[in-house]
Image (tube, one colour):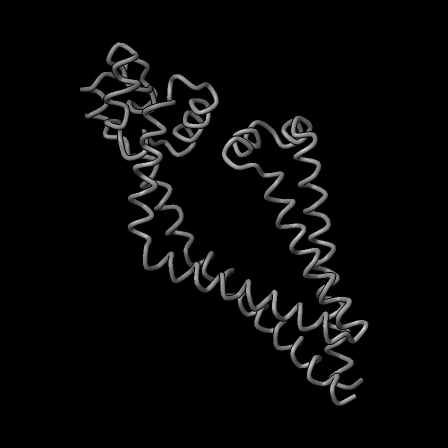
Length: 237
């Protein structure tokens, strides 16, 4: 088998797997969007909290559609030896790659700015809705319970909202689950905020995330190289 034939077969199989994976995600996304109750019943209460933060159904539909289209283009382009499909596949992968690199650069340069904006936005939402909006309260309670944290930065996030509305009491999570959580006990408990804990978890897994990202980038570069090789070799046939 020649190098061209081998790469053609590998291109077809690789993109067929991508297309099937995309179709699976697309189907799951449609299911979640149409029948979210069954999804919650199957995967438990935690999935309900996730659905409240992000519309998982539409996200899965978008990702699945992109992957399916990408896999279809690469698979058909290699199988039919279509220069048009191959160059389209190459262009889409290149655009995705450039966006990923740009996003990584922006994330590195503006991390502190993004953290400051996020703190300000989430803190305002916490002060406005915690203890008043049941869904928001349930999500925060679950988060504070699982991470053993209090507020976004610390117990003072509740000073001008929940604390005043609940007879000068903080949520029990701010006092190691003590229901009588006044200012003195909250100060003595000194429970860390959820934001620093989340950042700590993210940073502790930064190596894994970086490795996965690097692997994805290498796959994209390899896919572009193979697509371009097949595209150029078609001129010689």
